[in-house]
Length: 216
Image (cartoon, rainbow, N blue to C red; front, side, top):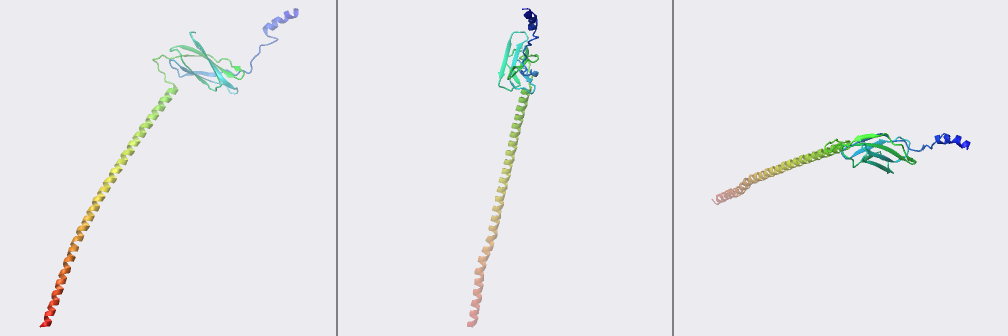
């Protein structure tokens, strides 16, 4: 009994048997930030130190006035961000993030405070800006494509009109040349037909005169 009375203070203080420390726990997340703030949602992101196997995360979400508390847990994922939904507008929140490893959960990260926006407030987020830029880029590309198509169609129509006019002028010139050739060939043929009978008549007259001279 005397020995136990001597050892009891040591047992209570943990000098003989110090508390077990879970050395296999993963390290706490770092660089916890809140982005894409809106009236009813926000995005939490964090970093995990290298060298440890992380299989999930846990997020503690609590309103600063203590009216609501939520605990989010997800495993079998390598995500380093989470979207918080169904938040109250214009309200203060406190969040902490834990990493989940093969042998348990890490210590909670430092507390991060943020405040949601009002419905009338509009704070453009990075993702929304990128979406707007992308849509503007697509609209500009569509406008450029439409303009290019209009220009190409206009040029093709102009070329078609020029070709049609050229063909028409070529047909007119060809018809004129053929008519001129026909008019040139008609006088020569008539002249040749007239000369032959005339020559025959002259030849016959000369022949009759020679016959008459022989008779005298």
